Structure formats: structure tokens, C-alpha cells
Length: 420
Image 1: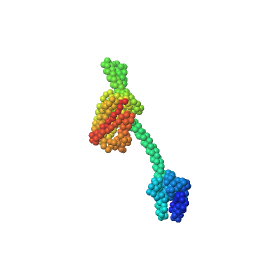
Image 2: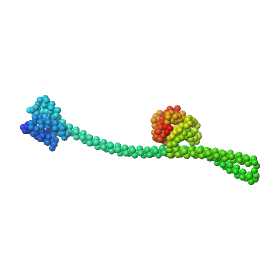
Image 3: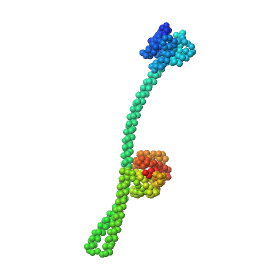
Image 4: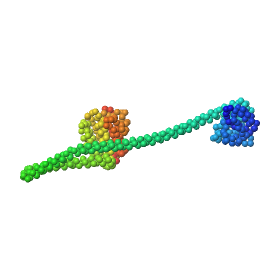
């Protein structure tokens, strides 16, 4: 016989207990009796029933309502369905039964078929409820397990991404450093080119003077006229002055280069004039583009004095100029660039660099400062030039940079920097 259900019957009248037990046992239910509310509360602690049939009036102890309240207050028994079976069949009696937690109310004398139908229904509903709760618990455990696994995977993936980001950051720093060294290499090449002329002139002057010195010594042995002596002295003076001027120019260039090298590598803050810095930059870069017909003009007021990092500002301007030569005038052999500066506040300077080149496509503008973004992929473009510019401006120099551009009209970079 199938297990139809486990039922606890609570009634202080043994006859009533016997009638209900016989009825339910004959149908196949497992039944336990309890003669009082107190006995019923102890019985449910040893084995939970699937349904409780509870009398209301039980003199000498807990009545049915109080027993129901205690069962409802216990987390272990609160879900067990309770049916009151009582001779108290008034409307208020039934309402009180439902208020304290019963699921049904049967008045005595009862009809056997009615009791069996209600018992069957509530046992079935209870089992469905328990099955659903069991499914929910199983699903909850499964979801918790999946959530834990997902959290573990997220943690693992986060660690992987963190490691990857650290590697990318190191790689970017190395590439930026390489770009800085490359920029310094341009400066070295520029100074080497500029040194070539004064050193060559000085060498020519000293060589000529040495030849004239030998001729003069030979003529002295043979005898020399006053006019020849005066001619030698005049020529020696001119050659000496020429050598001195060119050597002095060489010293100036070397000192400038030494300061550039210190600025590029040490990143030390110092006082400097912007117009002097720009002149040095233009002078050192001029030889790199001797075959270009692009025109560079500057409008830098005198006496704009910074207490900042000249090497950083130089790096920014050099990168912008190189970027214009590489991109703005691609496919053209002419164009104009303009660099200007103005004081716009008590401690603020705006530096603008513009060109009348090809311009930047609108869809590229939001990405031009992104590391490794370039429209010259595979053509020598690293995509780091403008990224370095933004990093230096917003980081070391404490300023900000914006760009405006129109296709066919040109591009303008506007940089605002504190003077100190």
C-alpha cells in the first residue's frame, strides 16, 4: 500500500481519537495520537507529521488555539498544515482558527468523506510545497556553487588581466622611454649638424693660419719686407678672429645641447624662458627637414618665464612638430606651421601649435591620444607620439591639451600650462 501520509491527531477525548484513527488507518495513512497540546508539541520534536488534526477545546492544558500558535512560532513546525476539528462551529470560532494559522476547519459531528477529502487535499498540497522547497533549496545550492565557481573564475581572470595590464604598462613605459631617447637622438643629430659648420670653419681658419705661419717663417730667413709683415699680421688677425667666432659658436651649441640632454634625462625643474627654449628647438630641428618647403613661424612673447620642466615642454613641442611633418603634409611638399604663446592668467600660459595641412578625420579625433593609435600602421608610425604629449602635459606639467581639426583646413593643438 502506498504511503498516503503521516498524520498527528490531537484530541483530549479518547473516543474521538479512536474514530479518527480508524478512519484514516483504514485509508492507508500513518497515524499518531496525542491526548493534549503539550503531548503534541513533544511528539512533533521526534518526528514531523505531514498534517495535524487538532481539537479546539481541551480543558486542563493548552487549548487548540494556543497549541496552534506555538506550532506556528516554531521554525521547525510552522509549515505543517493544521486542520481544526471541533464542535465549536460558530463563525468567530472558525475565524479565530484561521487567524492563529490553521489551513482548514471541520465542524463536529463531521462527515467521514469530507474529512478524508480535506486530509487528502492538504497532505497533497504539503507534499507539493515540500517538493518545491526541496527543488528551490537544490537550485539555490546549485546557484551558490555556480556563483562560487564564477567568482573564482572572475578572481582568476582579474588576476590574469591585472598581470596583463602590468605587462602592458611596463611595455608602454619602455616604448615611451624609447621614444624619448629617439627624440634625444634627433637633438643629437641636430647639434652634430649645427656643429659641423663652425668646427669646419675653425679648422679651415687654423689650417690656413698654420700654412701662412710656415711661409712667414721661411720668408723671415730670406728677409721680409714691411708690407709682407703687415699683410701676414692682418691675415693672421682675421683668421684668428674667424676661428674664435666659430669656436665660440661651437661652445654655445655644446652648452645648449648639454642643457637639453640634462632636461631630457633628469627632468629637473628649473627657471627658463619659453622663447629661448623654442628658438633652440627650431634650430636643432631645422636640419631634419631641409628638403621640406613647409614654413614654420613663431609668435612667442619675450619674458614668459616658467619654473617647470623644460625637457618635458621640449618633448611636447618636438613631438607635435614631427607629427605635423609626418601626417599633416603627407603627399605635399608645402605647408605652414605656426607656434604661438600667450599669458591668459596670473599663472597660466596657452601654447598653440597649428598647421594648414590635411586635417584629422572626425572619427579619429577621439582616439588620437590613445597609445598605439596611428593611421600610419606599418609605415613607421608607433602611435605613441601624441600619447606621450598628453601624458606629459596632463601628468608632469599639470596642464591640459585639446585638439581641433577640419579635413582640408588643418589642425590646432591648444595646451594650457601653469607657469610654476
